[in-house]
Image 1 (cartoon, rainbow, N blue to C red):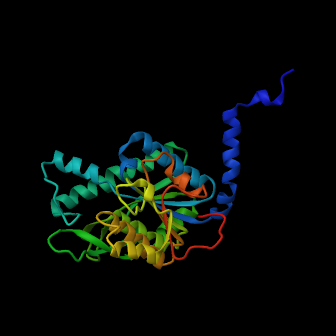
Image 2: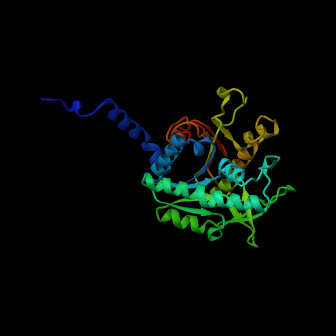
Image 3: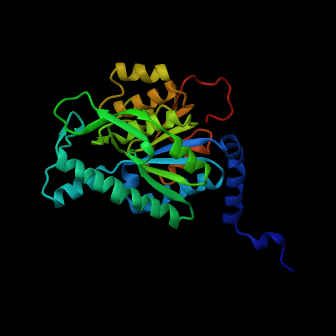
Length: 302
């Protein structure tokens, strides 16, 4: 007669062990809100995209309230090319004239957003696609920089609709298009939108999926990754020029969200399969976590 151990494989045993080890984190964050900014390679690579979507559905399935904010720069560039509109950038901002704004809204709201909603449904979740215009979610204002067209900043966030959807069991999927009080549409940086929505929702975490390991002391050396730092340390790194280029707005939006009550902000490498689960459900995580103040002798980093 066969022994009981012959009825399951080593792979089965490992899977159960991993789930058991994740239990303290699931208990810690069940019922809490996590805002995920989805972008970079994790949106372009189909195999990575599938894993991110499964991670989002997993988080929802274990009681973590997930809200997704997305960009879509490469898709916008592709459609601008099809329409013979030359993409232009100034100081890192997409110059957004009226024609480009039409394309941005079409791509982000009509294509990318609905594709992500559909993928969540296919993975067994429930999602609703939104943009800043829906339910007066995000009110925009022109950014301070001149000659960039309809590039906006967040003037106000009204989280009522998002809260209602989350409480009803849906994953809100939000594109970073919003309008000002006159109805004029604006293209807003998705990191910024994610940070402001996280603050308005009093989120437990803001997580930015990027194409970098996190915050590095030496951007050429991944081994210099900073796993945990306080707000002031992050500000100092910007002042010292260690955080530079495209990382500055990411770190700044993390700091701003923390200053408004978000408990932790994470910058992680979306090129790593299941990066979200690795960051949330392991002690060391895989990216950089910024917190208002480090906890002494804490057993769980998160």
